[in-house]
Image 1 (cartoon, rainbow over the protein chains, first blue to last red):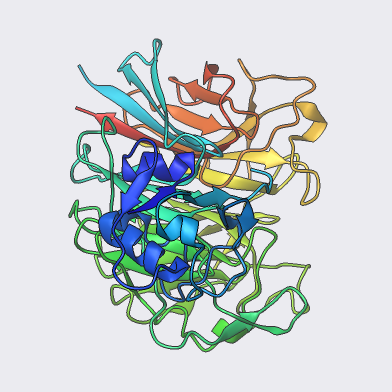
Image 2 (cartoon, rainbow over the protein chains, first blue to last red):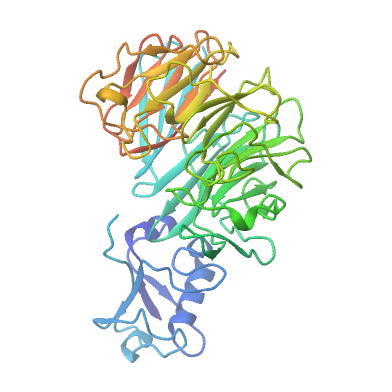
Length: 98
Length: 371
């Protein structure tokens, strides 16, 4: 299972507490994880990625294993530690005012 | 006993203020959607328990929330605002073509008769409608596709459609206002549109009397007299007596004719309220005195309403959607400030008191008069 950490506002929106766990079929990539997340929680569509272009929203960041994956290609494999559930995939609101 | 519900949108959430008909004691609930910008929330005239709210965030984008119980509980509904076809370009600040891009929903205007129908004014400027209670949204693209559309330029707040006025006597007639394109009217329920800006004069554009390019800040109408419109423009307070076909200035003795909101007394169609602001760069009241101005003559002759409002060292702003009236007798008037105060008058503006003083910056104020 893939572990996903959502920022507080998106946990509130999705009505979840703590980490979300997701089953992902096929290669574990940012795209497949986000696709699975949005299938489970349709309210999150458009909050992380643009609904039409599927581009990451400018003030959202993706971290895992102490790395910033925000600029990685969406179909690049995520680290094994994320794919095995040893480490979470973190979706983070950028440090950008507010 | 009748009562009022004041819906307040702020930079960091929504608040619902309720009172009985005396409007002396208030209950405050909120923040709803804490941490999110609530540009606007408004109730359906056909079902006061049906509310719609525009919730947005620089991080996470746009949501629309709907309540079926007067704001006690909310559920997110549709948030896909996709322009019809290939949207093309409008002008950017530097005059270059810029693609139409969705940024946020500025204003939600529920139908006067159907709780499930609601209009949304968005940035970049376009008008959307939902007829399924906000689940899906469809652009009324005749507006954006108007021949002048590629020449529209954003105001300081973006190219936003911020005002939607529905004619209660003619379901096919809709007015909108766009900063900085001007006012537009449809007589066929939003299919086709034409600018209604004749008589406006804006020295900040190359041709001050151009067909489009005016920064209209707000339009108000009294439902008993839908052909008469009042407008607060970037500068100038204006009036039309022919459904927008022509406008004339009614700024009269105002200390400044710059401002954002304008509204009409619930029972006196010729009584109008504005909040003068010093200038386009100094967004605070002249002389540091927060004054609502009231005209009982439909314009030109204005009186300052100061009782209960700060008359020194006050440097707040009142935004375009942040004033509303109730329909009790006497008419209640409400407005919210960038300093987080919401002021109420239960006597048509003669005296004022803050309902709340320390909210986040207020973006919008709407009032529902409850049975």
